[in-house]
Image 1: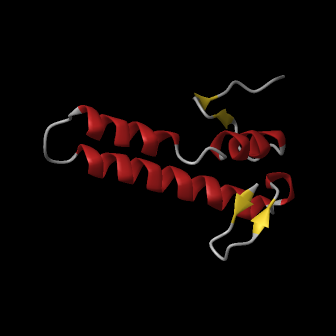
Image 2: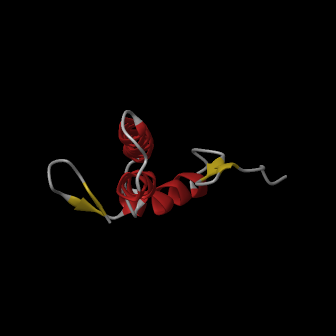
Image 3: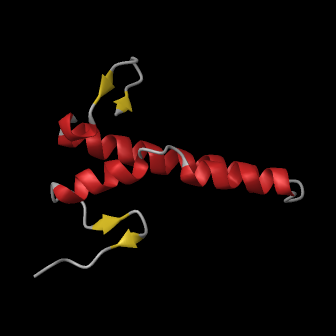
Length: 87
């Protein structure tokens, strides 16, 4: 399930393809921006490393969103990067 910014809950499989791709892009843009801001300035103590790791795993639905986009043929990569196309 994904919760929209309006607070509506929608099953990932029921998301419009454009919404699915926009959501993945939003997550990737924000997770890396937040992680980069955590790296900026100061020492990387255990607490800061934990925050960075949290940002890089947020949100828990990310893997399911990418898998659904792959299933639809919208993207040719997995959560770990590019995937080879089956022939």
